[in-house]
Structures are given as C-alpha cells and as structure tokens.
Amino acid sequence: MPENLGMEEDTELVYRTMLSHPDAGIDQIRELTRLPEADLKDQLARLSELALVRPAADDPGRMHAVAPRIGMKVLLAERQAELAAAQQQLEKARYAAEKIIAEFSQVQDSGNGEIEKLFHLDEIRDRIRLLCADVREEVMAFTPDGAQTAENMDAAKPQDADLLGRGVRMRTLYLDSLRNNPPTIAYANWLAEKGGQVRTVPSLPIRMLIMDRTTALIPVTRDDSATGAVVLRGDGILAALCGLFEATWERAVPLDSCKVQERDDRGLVPAEAEVLRLLAKGHTDEYIAKRVGVSSRTVRRIAADLMEKLDARSRFQAGARAALRGWITFDDTASTM
Image (cartoon, rainbow, N blue to C red; front, side, top):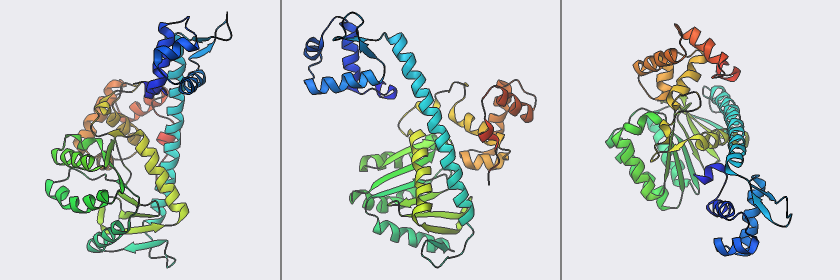
C-alpha cells in the first residue's frame, strides 16, 4: 500500500501521472489529476522530499519523475532505517517500563498518592470500576492473558459500552495467539462496532491498564493478577508506561488483518521471532509460553523449528548461529529483570 511507503493517495496519483506523462508540465498535471493548484504543489513537495521527483536536466522549470526501480529502492531503504530506529526505541521503552514495573510491583502504599497497593481481587475490581467511571478521554490496555471465555467477554461489555458511549477512546492489545479464539474475535468485532480498537502482538510484558495517561494499574505478580495490584500515578512513571504502550501499539497488527503471518527477512513469522528473542535471553519454555500466550509444547516445537532453520543441534548452537547471522543482537541477549 502506498501509505506504507510514506505516500498518501494523492501523492501516489501525482507520481503515477508524471510517470505516465513524462513531458507534462504543471498545468497539464493539474488537469490530469484534477487537484487544486495548492494541493498539487504540496504533493510535488512531498514527492521531492521522498526523492521521487527532481528538476528536469533539460528544463529546470519542469519536474521529472524518477523511475520506480530507483525511487522505490530509496523509499524501501528509508523505511527499513525507520523501522530499525522504531524497533530500537521500542526496546528502550520496554526496558524502561519493565524496570519501573520491577521496582514498584512489590512496594507498599507510599503515602504520597503516587503509588498505592491493592491486596485483594475484589478490591482490584472495585478500583477498576471507579477508575473507569472517572475516565474522560482514553483507556489503553495490555491483555496478555490466555483465551477468554464468552462469559468473561460478556461480563466486560457493560463497562466497555459505557466508556465507548461516553466517547472514550479505547485501545486494547492482545496476543497474536488469540486470533484463533472465537470468543475473543467476537468480542473484538463488537468493540470495533462500538468504536474501540484492537490489535495483536507476539508477546506482552504484563497486564496493564492506563486511564487518561494519568493513572496505571498493574499486577504485583506478572502471572497472577489476583495476588494484588499497584496503582501508579506521577508524570515520570506514566510517561514511561505510555511510551511502552505507544511503541508496542505502533508495531501491532489490527485484529482483522492477516499480515501477522507474514515472514520477515529472516523467514520468521512474528511468533517465531519473539520466541527466538526470548530464548536468546535465557528464558525457560514455561516463561516464554506465558509471554507469547501458547503452550510450553508449542514453544518447544517452535524452538525445534528454529534449530532446523539454523541447522543447529542444540539451542546453544542455534543461538550462536543466530547471532552470527545477525538474527539477534546484543540487546536481544541481555538479561531481563
């Protein structure tokens, strides 16, 4: 799609028109595209920024469209650089947020209103209801749990319907592994009909709920929210957590998209790439299974497939060969908290 290359629909229209009519002047291009003069100038400026047009060698007053074979290579190289930078930023945000989570998940109430400990599941649920009642603009959620039942989804609908009915923006991130779970798909479609947005990613660090970018709620224990939770406030803490959410949201895939199964330049689908990243950090099959939302058996199968791809006889050898091929970096192998 043109937007994936940094081009809007009108930008692509002007570029295609110039390719089809290489001798056309500005007036003729305007007639062919039926764009207002100001809009045409804006699109030409955008094409110039993308290095897809330049002044003609024989007539500096006329713009020349660069051949797609050359121009697309430049655009793809730029996009690859942008994606690499975005991935690096995501890893930094992930590290900062997980550090905050590790530091504050075991604390008691600080007494200053910025950190509050909730001890029981009923207390957590009541606080979520109160926080949702006060939400004015936005709710962001990490939902790394396994498959949800239809009953659980139906129980959440009244509160979500109230939020969406009040014009609150709702963005929810699930795991890719839930794409084959009918209740989740049905619930996501219902949310979309009401105005909510749902995307999926290969893994999520922890369950998290952020309201209006001023209050966050995370569990004390990564794997069991019933053991207690922490309510966090404060500009520094929320900035890091919101940064983690936004970075993860940007690389996530809308639930109704099939792109999640596309293979990257290593020949890996997102789940395989995430398992490789977590294996490189030395995590156990059980830990990875919870992060990715699959069974330990599935993790072992993926690990075996990765070893086969890398022609390795052991996981250690697979990690070494992945590093040599540039499939994983120093950041991938750094230990987590």
